[in-house]
Amino acid sequence: MIVEISWLQLSLVSIFILVLLAISLYESLKLEKSILIGSFRTIAQLILVGYLIKAIFLNAEWYYVLPILVIMLLLASQTLIKRLKNPIRGTYIYALIAVSITSILTLIAIFTLIVNIPRWYDPQYLIPIAGMVIANGMNGATLAGERYKSELFLRLAEMEMLLSLGYNSRRASQTSRKQALIAALIPSINNMMVMGIVHLPGMMTGQILSGVMPDEAVKYQIVIVLSLTAAVSLTSWIFLNLLDKKFFTPNHQIRYDLINPSK
Amino acid sequence: MTNNNILEYSDVSFSYNNTSNALDKISFSLKKAEIIIILGSSGSGKSTLLKITNRLIELTSGCVRYNNQDIKEISPLLLRKEIAYLPQTPYLIEGSVNDNLLLSFQNKEDHNLANNKIMKTLNEVGLNEKYLTRSSHELSVGEKQRVALARTLLNHSKILLLDEPNSALDEENSNILIQTLKQIVERERISMIIVTHQLDFANNLGNRFFNLKNGKINEINNPKSAFINGVI
Image (cartoon, rainbow over all chains, first blue to last red; front, side):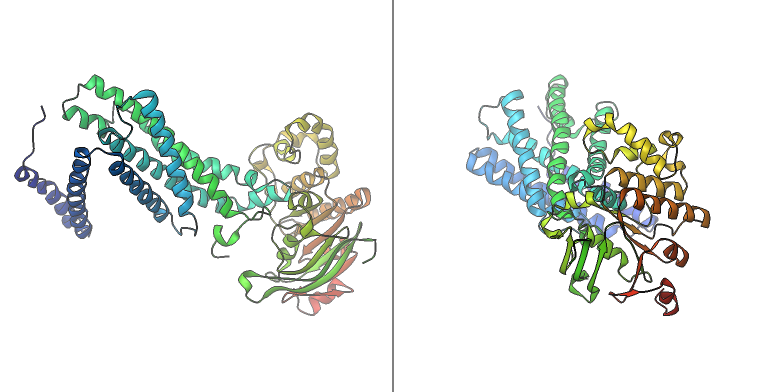
């Protein structure tokens, strides 16, 4: 049985906000406004989501669950594009395709092969796991997209050389794509290296706190960590391959205006 | 257009983002085994002109014909094998000289047959077999230039577009490059368009001379006149 937190007790989290504010004030970080807004948003958004998910749990029907997933996909794709510096027009749809395909495939794999849930839309399983898959895929693809653009800029001479020798644009941008994928995957791979030793992941901690035995929580965590790393690679890979079309014309010419906007 | 012309520019214009013309109605032609020298100050559109020729960038209006065919009708990937562009600073990939030369053999199956061709071409540009295993980082600018040239020759290009090939070379290396290029033209009957700032280099290599100023091109009899008229 889980120990419940009363609203009064919850209000004492303000201690942590005060610590944050104190350090910011003492060191003149000028982060007070962001800390207050951030803290308020965390509390408000989570309470709201808590009630929303509770309502969905109580009415566990696919027509309540599915729109939530669609909203998550749309917001994640928008965030992915927003986080790229100088986002390029028309790439939102690429982000949406990459995040959606990855999420659907990963969730199908998890819930048909590994975790057999009674109904595919069971919100208790589907929403938290979909949230993690979507968010991780989004973060990976953001890293990949950002790195890809800077690699293309750095490798202009190399690309011109390869195109001049008659290679196609896909081959010319291959090294940039490779570096971008590595940049996206390294945090997830590093994370796997220290998993359970340095890093006790949120979901496992949450399950243990909710009364699930650690050995069972660990099984879930293994599924999550490996599926998330796969999701990061797949989202980034799809996103990069779609993005590739933006930076070159069909005649295998570099779009200098997008890679180097100063030119 | 006479049959002797391998390349012909007719009213070629180019502008960035539809602003003023970087190239303005350029017309001239290149014959087989001919070396044309283009003189002009930096920013006069010389590199743009070269890149238009093998469709690294697309011309805005006008027409370039290669062997009597509009280059827009030729696949850019094929065209770039025929018409090679060498930038001012040659780019070599990380790895050995051999790795760089193997880039000219796009099919991995060809790599086994490549050795003899590579050796022959390396000699043509004045380098010996010891260079094959050397790292591209260790090479001087002049040596890099020659490796890049060998890589282009291995691609069986018919026209070379050289963008200020001697800008980073001392006099000795510049003279070596002149001899190498002359031999290549004689032996392979390759045509060249060379952009340069340097009078001696131009004089020693060119069959015909043009100057490019404010996006417009004019043929001149003697590269010296470009200097006298303050083009460079």
